[in-house]
Image (cartoon, rainbow, N blue to C red; front, side, top):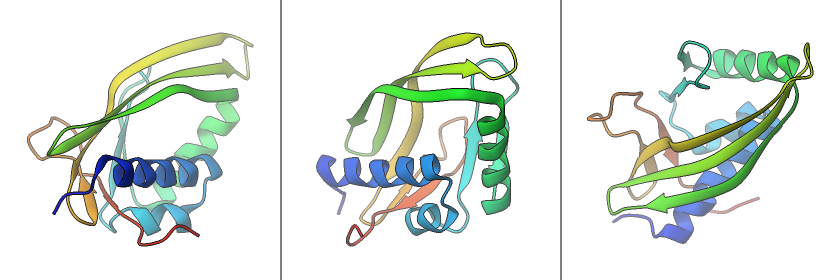
Length: 137
């Protein structure tokens, strides 16, 4: 049984909230223990982040690098076997004051099952899985 779009939206909102708050406990309530995050900002080389420490280190580095970073126009798109999101990111580089506007489409692809979301193995990036929370706190 697949999650309906509204359930998938909640899952992704909880995932995003955990990343925004840099809350690894909250993040690992919605991701599988073997979660792998492939991060690419279109400027620097792709990063493969495995485990809490690597993810938190990356989030801390970005917080130090950018004075501001805001996701805008986030839209979740759901197909029967995959979900993805499109978005814009507005950010200001702390060291230079440079303001950047990045647009991402297909920024994150996830295969959806009853209580897990995983990047499909046929896609050229990581096998990332999220779990659907039974109840939101």
